[in-house]
Amino acid sequence: QVQLVESGGGSVLTGGSLRLSCVVSGGTFRNYNMGWFRQGPGKEREFVAKISLSGVSTFYPNSVKGRFTISRDNDKNTVYLQMNKLKPEDTADYFCAADRHGLGSFDSWGQGTQVTVSS
Image 1 (tube, one colour):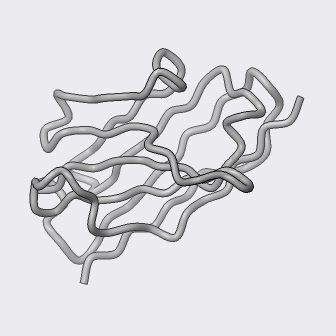
Image 2 (cartoon, one colour):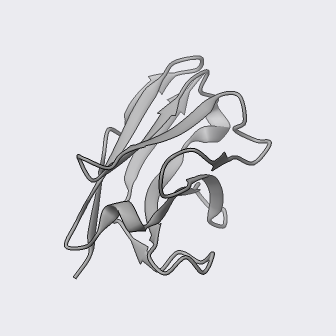
Image 3 (cartoon, rainbow, N blue to C red):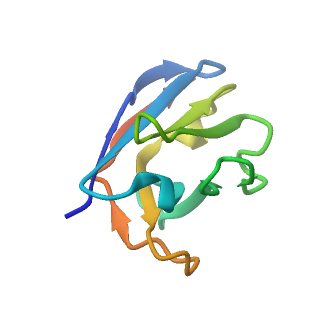
């Protein structure tokens, strides 16, 4: 049973930074494409970032490109999301997810960590 546990959320002021972590257990982390998603108050879930097995390839939507960086440490079974220049609209619950089968869909999810950005 694969488990994903996020941490690192909190409250920051506009322009601040946070680094989220997601530790994966119970599976073969290095075989999974990984991603981060978020869901703000009253909003639908939104894709934030994804990273390939080796970490060489990453992808971001325009809303976070240039501010957020996804990375991974396959020796620590951990994926990170470095968030800089945070804005109030980044306020959301952030979830990490695993694409375990390489099909382009994320099938395993963490419980989320809350990020609040105030002005």
